[in-house]
Image (cartoon, rainbow, N blue to C red; front, side, top):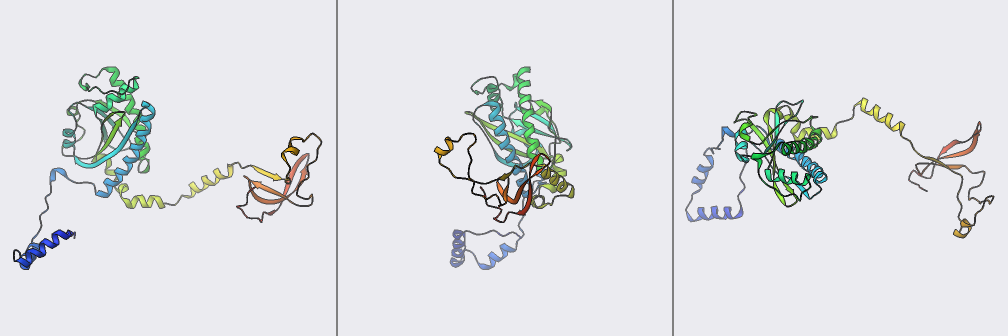
Length: 332
């Protein structure tokens, strides 16, 4: 049972009211015993828990970072995209909240059922298109009169951006977003029933000096199969999940194929720069290691074994004698 925590001022006021007779202890007890009625709007059915909404927020925070990188490279200007909010509302309310004429990209997300909407504020969309066409990123809102070329440019730009959505969702499901529809009037777009619950993730977007919103609308039918995976318990289980035998086998095979440089060190010597520069063919260099001592074998510059030199056929070779006892961390 949840309990409201009173502030110090509220506690002082309550004690003062009891002491002055404005409120009796019996009245206070009676008020506590009364059933408190909580208002519930059946038109705004909450079908996702706060935990699940937080999981969706984390996923789209990652998506926002990817979009920032993608659009920065495409537009070659300052781009900043962050998650502003994530709410569950009726689909009808989402349609009423966006401009009457806007940019609506509708994506199918197989293997999931249903479609999702990426609504882009016209100011943002035109600033992007102006940059693509070589402009400074100025925005002109004339969505109702989009030409075929403008429509093609915009749809192509946001279709490529959907690849980042695929990567952001990879942690819970592997989807293949496909742009199925490009619309400018939300009244012509009836994906689900008006009272259907949708999750709307709003992204604050800044392109150069232009700012606006990108809204991602995800109907309940799309997220319904993923609800168990959106809990914090699932995320913790995923983090601790052990590798399967097949994964371990493949990992071992990959490691065995890895190449490492192996060096047999014959010895070392110290000389002056003057002596080094005066070396000529036929000169001998005295090494610190005796011919009777074992060589040190370095694997990726880390000493690992003692060995002795030899010959196999007409090729030089080394024979491993013992592991290097100087410690694995010893280097050059």
